[in-house]
Image (cartoon, rainbow, N blue to C red; front, side, top):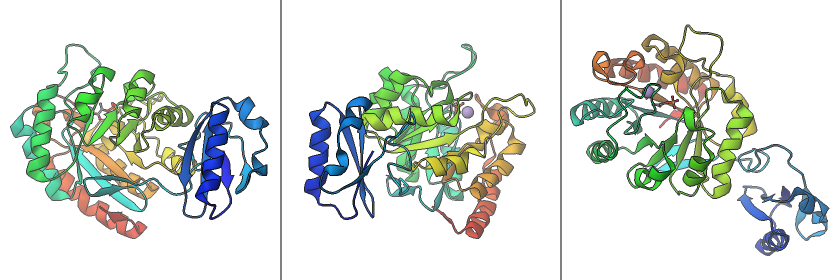
Length: 337
Ligand code: PEP
Ligand code: MN
């Protein structure tokens, strides 16, 4: 990592970038408010041999030994803010994202979408491809589900997120969805990470349910390095010895990620707790811990839902939750967007 002096000339930055290229390495420039930082990736031996400090405008060169570099705070001090159809995610605001776990049909989707948007959700969720533990469970409507989501986007004027499971579907899903999502089971699917990394669509990267924070940030690094810089990290619970909840929400991950990385952090209380009665308490904790938003399953009829009915909030429960979230956010000095 090559840290430039404050207010360096562009020509000096370009000279460093050219020097990095001349030894076959790649550079990633971060223009901060005070100074620019150039992340050089490639052969560390070659990189460390050169006398970077002798170049004009270079303050210091620091070897970054972590397995993630570009997604780290060392590389970029300021928070990344992701803008999707006028909604800004990250840096001092809290974004509510909600909707059904899966798109089942038009009526079901539109009912949930209308309700969550009315209560203050700024991003709609609803999946067309469902990763299921059993091959006999409902797998989603596929492209037809994305078409319905696109209709809901127009009807309720809200961007939407949808999961992509297969590298071969990335372009197709990206042609509909405003935000792609990589699910917990695919966090370490490097083919999928690379493919999504080549898209310009914002992406949510869920934490693998048995992954450490370092492994998670390294997975984000794969996409960042490919050129996709609009990454949100979604804590969705990890597997522990505790079986009273579906997973254990690792709330500690929120301040840790804020310290280690500049990327927005989102909490998914639905897939963490796995039970309706746990969703509101975990959602409240997300605001208090400093998350940038949450992702919540809402269904107008959880008892007939084809996926994850046991953890879905009713629209009225989501509405009540949003009232409390606004108060908590206010107390924290955070705006609910
Ligand atoms: C989901 O959000 O619907 C989902 C499948 O989540 P996860 O990948 O965290 O299990
Ligand atoms: Mn779900």
